[in-house]
Picture (cartoon, one colour):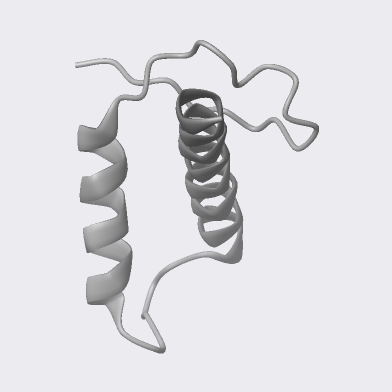
Length: 69
């Protein structure tokens, strides 16, 4: 299985990328299951997860904007 990870704060690259929801949904479920003070999770991992989920959310927002405007 492959997925696309996007970090595009300017929003220039997100148009037209396929949205592979499965890995992002699994990642979000795992993060939510951690609770407020996860043991053994490094700060660098949290930063990377934040970038990955932020990039995917920006792609979803851009897709909705293009689809309904």
